[in-house]
Length: 481
Image (cartoon, rainbow, N blue to C red; front, top):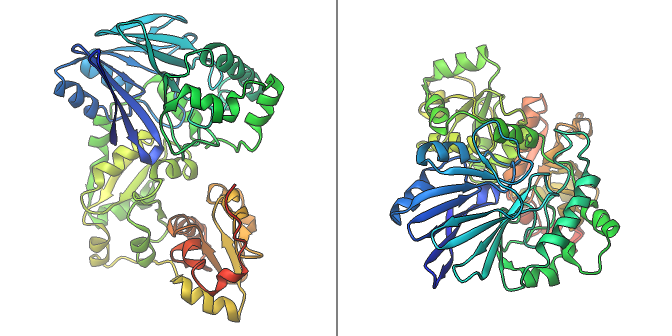
């Protein structure tokens, strides 16, 4: 988590953005005159409790902008531990105690007023929260997934739960919400969204995590003043890929409730000896998830284990590739990273960690058990071999990355869709495999090996390394759009 100081108004209000890069998510902490509110908290709530304690403040409200799909919110745990009131916008029907605000309802936090503005579109219950100071001046708006910097929320997540709420229906609602509720607000207010670049909740988000509404009206395609509803819907849906499979499951956890994170961590922190770990893997349906770095995994790992390293986009990749949040997991972690791994899994609803390998791979090897490895070459070695014999190359990057530069004739199998595109994986001969920097290709290699493919050769450092070799003369080097 990264704490970003956003405002310290003369009216004695503090607003901090608490940004978590792994899932590109922003929660917000607001404090005024000894009272605090948290907006869209993460699953691990202790940092918010400690932040309020630092200000000698009481957490009065826990505001939720909507039922999140990409992460499990900490609203229930935070309410249980602080007595704060959970607040949702109109139409929300949670299975736990919460205050369901009406459109325009106001809440006092110290000297500040928080006004709920119902903005259906991303989801039906989506609600923004307008921040108004003691002089009745609008200062900012927490927009959730309704409005991002450079983008707006995708409208295709609700149909998995309610057939009538198609992406076209919600896109129409979103157009109206933006034009009738958001765009009439003053240009000088600050937009505080729930996500930044890298989130799957939109398609064109900026790396910036705040902006003025006035600047967004000038630069955000979705806020064009002369845009018709039909044009808006077409542009919003154009190029919108399928949402990750775990999204509907996270929505249900946020609606129905979940186990306390303390319980999840306690259960998952079970240290297995190599013998116990092996027995558990053989007698359960658990996936062995190796969260070390890609170099260590490629060098030596437990046969059949899946690699998704903590040092990359860990939680979203787990959700995209393992998919079922109830899937039992056995962890291989760097020493001392067990709690972090369990916590980050729980952020996206993967609560069924059975335990971890005590002593890691060193203990596994000392016990005499079999290991596997991923054949890897440096970019320079690949360039020399490729010049002599042009083997098949599989590019595991996104189509947009591939289109902006690739090895001619390389087969594009995006990591997101490897399970659906196994038929495209070469079977009869060795092939080279790469991504952008070396992380995703090792994930794909581990998945392929677990499915019986052992004929891949991973290119270390990925496309970034390849471009610095002799092969670069054959690349499409177009700049990203």
